[in-house]
Image (tube, rainbow, N blue to C red):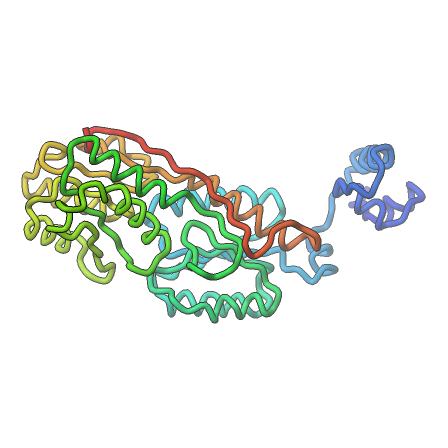
Length: 337
């Protein structure tokens, strides 16, 4: 027997196509007894839905886009896995776009999504992004957008993030508890909400030693378009009192470790180092790296689930002020002991 269609299944059961379709999607509108009868026959006849026919009827592409600033960071690698897991389970294809921290590339990617190629967009904005017109253009065409990890501060749209402010406080408290008196926060952007929130929490916690920190810059921006290694080496040379470093992103931590190794600066005796990172090899580094690790896989998974719910359900509870906050965790290792 060839592939049975939903129409043929409905005819054999003496039911409407709509009823059979809803039952196979486990709709609350169909009674359990009817669902059981429909599913039983569908399994018996090896019925398999045609996703292409379904997407054509709904004028959907069954494709979502994911716009990322980079993939070298382990966070985004894990987030991609979470997104893919949900997309595959729901029958969606995924298009990936890399902005390489460039607003212009991000804008081009979003504009490419604006032609009906995708049903929805997941985005983690670049460090250069300030303007929101390209995002608004998507939503004007009823293409849902969900921010994950990096959001646009003040822009109303669903977001899936972690508790960055509290983690900034946690990082500072840990270094202070370990005896640091001149800790600094290294950032890659003075505009990204994720960096601002982490630093704000950090600054709030070290306000207890405000008189001392007034003598040195306790936040330092490392420009992503310049050599990070040289910037960190210059910072350590210029401010020798620094005894603790919080790296807001993974690449800053790796370059800090390299600088200290090259200059024979002992970690943690001379400088303690903590990073926001999901690096799986953190325990294997020398010294092993203390991290605040974000639930990257779960953030990717939850953001994809949120987006697909917005795509598929006319009635859902996800509003523009929806914000899911998945907490991160502190993993103490030798770099701060």
